[in-house]
Image (cartoon, rainbow, N blue to C red; front, side, top):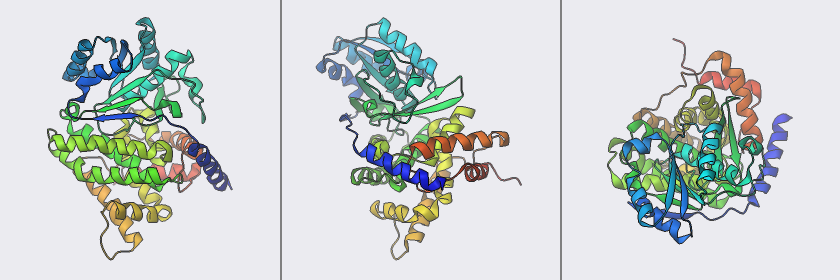
Length: 401
């Protein structure tokens, strides 16, 4: 009965999602485009901005071109570089204080998904004066957000176009998945030159993160023609270019195309939603500090196998449209092949097969929070209860020899 209730509830949410009026994000995708961010801001009438980033771009020196462009355009800026891999409420409060102190008019997020998510919620609380936890609800009703230019330095989260932000409440050791139409950035600047120095492990994990967005969006129960089309495009891009970018980080074409593929993945799930992969991955991040992309990459094949009877026709359809299906095979066989391709790609990219960080005593909490997030928020195609989820989470642990 509870499964039926959740299924009906998800369909009601689908009707709500279909009514959302999401602002259009201007996409600039060009090698070297980060150097033109100053002109983008100047054209929009901004003269004082807060740059939100983390220690990695600072250490690599890849902010230099953008900072030169800001100075050339007469843009004053302050920099907050304290964002951690799973951004916290403290990060947002610190960034907000800097935004207000410097009387900033807009925010530039320069980094991966964690940085962009932090920037989104900083822009909200800086303008509303509310605490982040105020928006940890199904329909958060965010009234406004500071103008945001997102400059992703990884090809994965798609946060540069999504209407979501995932923030860690460090006091409760809980990830808050906040979704609101106002969270879409105003501009996304895709500059592959920023991604050439990424370590192989980050390239792999963020790439499979993008694939997860596309696949979960396609097999979920909030299907729209537009999101399906983006999911197909993302799958094509990722299977064609991710391994190339992994093998040769300086392959500019592969980096450029992966940046576009990740954005496609973001467009796919921003209204079509995600599923249990994210519901579980968020637990691995909040309890054990696993980076979001890696957590998704580990969990994805397991969920696809668990939900296979409920989703195989959609998986087969996705595989066919992406040009990956073999001829003369049944939908079941095509779907099996597709899951096998993901498993094989994970293996080639060095993604662990199991979540060896899970502690058995944590399984009840992981299960409860995973279904608490997913069943109430995502269009999961194969609804699990707490007992079923706990049994599934146990299968993510390495087998005992």
